[in-house]
Length: 545
Image (cartoon, rainbow, N blue to C red; front, side):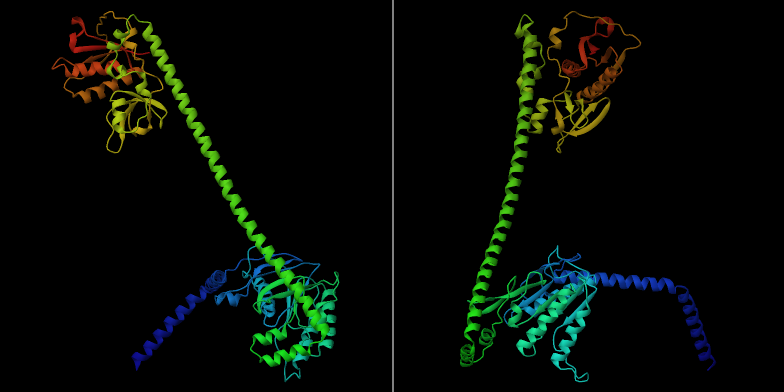
């Protein structure tokens, strides 16, 4: 028993400590709960908006424009909904809807009411973007049967009470939604009462959507009444409603056609037609003619709108094609201009070389003294290079090239790798670039440098300031690479000459070095060493200015 008491005391102690701890966090817990509720509401709104294909409305004083409005429940049920556009303004504030029974009047009225209420709640509405409406501070709704046995109210009395209460609403931030106004009584008296209520609503300058089958209400409204008619279209060919709103004209109730569509016995329907007065028949025929003409106008309007949209799409398409053509034309002109400039440059270079050739006694003598890469003629340097193999033939290791990525000349140090990368040397820096980024050098090599310089022999004696490059023991590639680095450094330091020691050996290294020197842009001239300055195992180089 003692153990149980101690356990209960320990549980009570733990609960007390937990309560005291949570009490200190009460404010934070309440804030977190409020934030979570707000997030849950926003997520629910977003999910509902996505399900209903809804759009946020714009609030506008004195303007109600609901574009392609739909009933949310019909959208959520994935039904094929006929969308309608409703426009009301300060001059036409009260929409008086008429038309066939089961034609969609009440659904349209409820769609407008739901849009107004959803907008008040901060929800998107089932309408297209750009829809606008006032922020209604009050909605009076008279839809359905409001009779009450306890309150001793009949259907009609309850309806009149709602209509009377709505007369206190004043201003365009008030919305009235009344279905079948004064429809549950004698048509003549009901029409008189309905007109009186509508005139009161118009005087109060409220927005209202009212449905009615009462014939007298379909006429007798002047331009200053604030009332605009609207009707739901009826397809006379198929004998069924289209649920399409037509603004500006009243519609027929078509009770007899509705009875026929509902399956009422044919003899009863025929007898009902015989009971219609001649005046009523004439009125219906004229109204039917007006509705047919208006329906044809609406169809033509829709067809014109579709054609206009298609024309706009075609216009945008062809404008894009024109813009594309202009860009391509500019690119082609730019490329043609570049090719022309390159051709002119090559012609100038060729003319300069040809002029140089003419200054010498023998063109054949000049050609025999040019390096092999120059003997192919000036046109070879201008041809397009499409493969790494062509690049290697055009620019073997030791050739001068222009590097477009760094904007300066450099010397090729090797062949392109399988990835197309070429090692180069520029200002003592070794880089690896793709062969396609290399261009002919900006400072063109002078192929006649060997010809036009004097052929006299020179003798040099080593001075302490001369740079000495010892290549003995190196392979040809290693020697050429090392020599290029030293020549680049010597040119950068504005040194006048360099001594290269390559030895005799099999003469392979000596021939390779001198062959390279003959085409190097760093070399003004070179001579073999004299017996006093190292003999034929040494080559003296005079650096270009």
